[in-house]
Length: 218
Image (tube, rainbow, N blue to C red):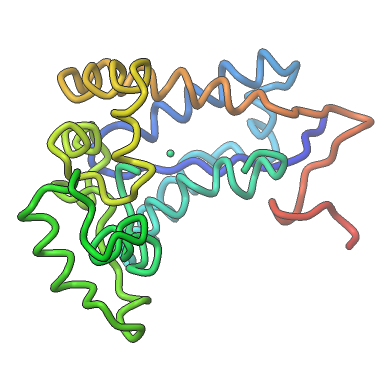
């Protein structure tokens, strides 16, 4: 039995997200008519191998946790194009700091203390474009619900983050997640399971890819 991609799952070490993603393997593979025990005979130590190597990668570079989370839907599910950990370059949000919507001033929806810190981190000159700022201002390397707390407190880094409060449905979710970390964790797990079932192809239409981003024999 084959599939179009490998799923790369990881332990961020801060909450048991690794186990959440193992549940994704079990349940979504069943829904997609795949077998989550596919590697039991050929590579029975696969979960431990993946976990160790992910832990080692994050130990060497803490930004790798965010990169692997993005890998799940950006690379391994190539037909589909999640900001609680990771960083963004200053160039992606600098207009909020100095020229929001061509106003010549900063975004009035941004917390004043955060604005001051970001202006120091990302001065209004081209040489600062590649500087990095944390997407989650209060818990940079921890996978948790602080992103939503930040948005409620006007500390969303990207304009698209803060704009969530402009929509009544999105705003209600933001407020719920900011107040209930367990609700966020449960809904996140459910959403990952749904995402993992997108575009699954089994034999003879699919293949186990050697590289997630491209089909074999290219």
